[in-house]
Image (cartoon, rainbow over all chains, first blue to last red; front, side):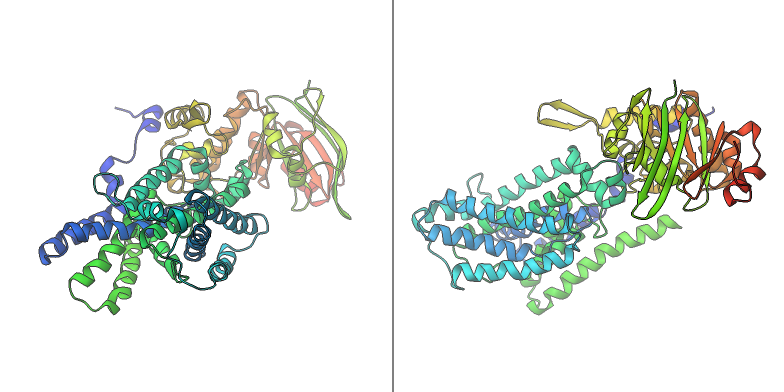
Amino acid sequence: MAVTLDQTIAQKQHTFFSRLFANQTFWVVIAVILACLFLSFATDAFATQKNLFNITRNITFVAIVALGMTFVIITGGIDLSVGSVLCLCSMVLAVTMHAGYSIEIGILASIVTALAIGAFNGVLIAYLGFPPFVVTLGMLSVARSLAMVASNNTVVFQFGPDHDKLLALGGGAWVFGIANPVLYMILLALITGFILRWTKFGRHIFAIGGNEHAATLTGVPVRQIKVAVYMISALSAGLAGIIQTGWLGAVTTNLGNGMELQVIAATVIGGADLAGGVGTAFGAIVGAALIEVIRNSLGLLGINAFWQGTFIGGAIILAVLFDRIRNFRRSD
Amino acid sequence: MSVLELANISKHFGAIQAVNDVSFTLEAGEVVGLMGDNGAGKSTLVKMIAGNFRPSHGTMHMDGKELILHKPAEARQHGIEIVHQDLALCNNLTAAANVYLGRELRRGIGPFRILDYAAMYKRAGQLFAELKSETRPRDLVKQMSGGQRQAVAIARTMLSQAKIVLMDEPTAAISVRQVAEVLNLIRHLRDQGIAVVLISHRMPDVFDVADRVIVMRRGRKVADKKIASSSPEEVTGLITGAIEQVA
């Protein structure tokens, strides 16, 4: 029977499974599950409630920032300032509360700080044509220095009248004994996933990463969207900073040092493409999970902690290697 | 009444006179080939019609009313669509997403509106069927042939009720078989009563599909003739300057 034009057009080329197997995130999920299974059998300490609680909570800070970073990376940009912004926002919260203000005002000040930094980065990048790498590298230095100025480089561990509220916010487990940071992470991941898949804004972010020139020509407000993604990235760092402050109960100017690299690693392992145009919320979480499981397992297996960097670096390269291999096969 | 009428249009950038005193009209359902060497002013002229540049002198009228454009979005509102030379497609998006880029369909109430995937796939599929192109709305553009990519870019112009479609070198970088496909797409637009301006370097394409040819040289219009009463030799002469000007 002859195939009509309409049938050809209506045909779906990919089945659910072909899509799944061609997906880097899927394989990273498999890797995480296999690693967890292996560790459950190989060690006694892994599958304990305490350890799992620890792992899930440790994932969250990198994962929350990675969600924001995903927006930036999809547009083809990069934000190196997130670690420092996290530190500055923590410090603004801590100093404000230490001075006797309420937790609401502290959080507000912290979020305003994050948005202002994101807007500054975004405007320089979108309107003045600065390379994202340079602007955010500069901000990496500026934000950490400002955190030192704000605190006079001391450790802040007294948060004024709302001290206990802040500690409950970050350190509590309000629902079913799941650590609060994990709940925030899940909520933020759902919001991120929704924005990327179902909104015009999300669609335009992908368009900018795919072909910025085309996006401009077709009337996408490229500049405004770029400013917005850097604000989202800084905001996610700020939120992670607030939560982490509550969890740690103290802020030092060391907080979030080198975190930008972990965050970028998590996004890339989760399937985002640094060249732009590809990335998911779920991928960011899964990438952060793989990094944390590797770190945790090395400790439990009694491997010298100096090897951590090698294994995490290996995971980054391996994840991207699979992607390369698939592309080679496709182009043959 | 003509769809578009340009009267004494000039454009200069500083001391450079890119387009000099050009007038012509465009009728509905007509394909006009716009030819000329590099730097002859074709692109500048088209960019003024598409709203990218404002003319330094002269006026444009659309359906008898004066047309003043400040930006490309306004041209689109007036029913002027452009197919860019590089097609302006995003490889990482589906065909349907590219067709609707910048004017996505949404459903929902008030501020709670989400992308309407089903409607966009459906309408994009209808457009491809109309264009007789074997293009699947759900396929990523990066997996597509040159002809399919052209179909996606052209389908974009059919979303709204376009009156004029400007095509910038649509056959410059594709295979022979695909050129035939694109020329068919152009005929299809014409049959719907759309006026098409085809900028091209390729003589055979223009003589194959156009009703009329306008030749530009050094910013001036040097010829505006029916294809039937011209010849490739004459047009080549006009482009290079071997023939000075024809009535």
